[in-house]
Length: 108
Image (tube, rainbow, N blue to C red; front, side, top):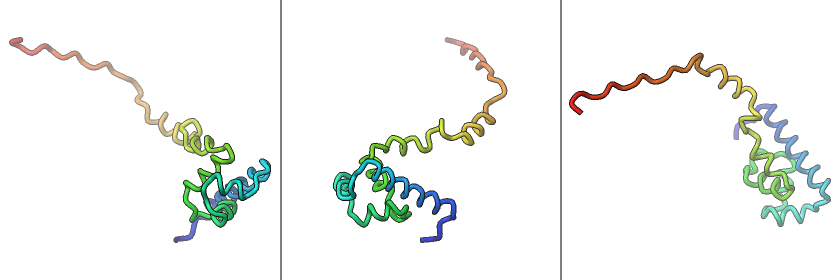
């Protein structure tokens, strides 16, 4: 696997740390999360470290167990994408013309 850009590695480490903190705030032992998420203990440990080799489905299952999967679904929602909204706004037409009426065909 190629080396991750530093911001990506940091974001994954932060995600893993935040997942671990959320689990601990909920007083959920690792064994409970492992069972409910249907993952192995090494996988949960890797998730909590922000390992990029763990599949997104495993991250999603842990977030589901923590009651936070809805936040994953909203990650790239247009309302959370100011750059995309700005680009879209810049490409809006200046004016909108009505379609010309079709002339009826002769002989009908």
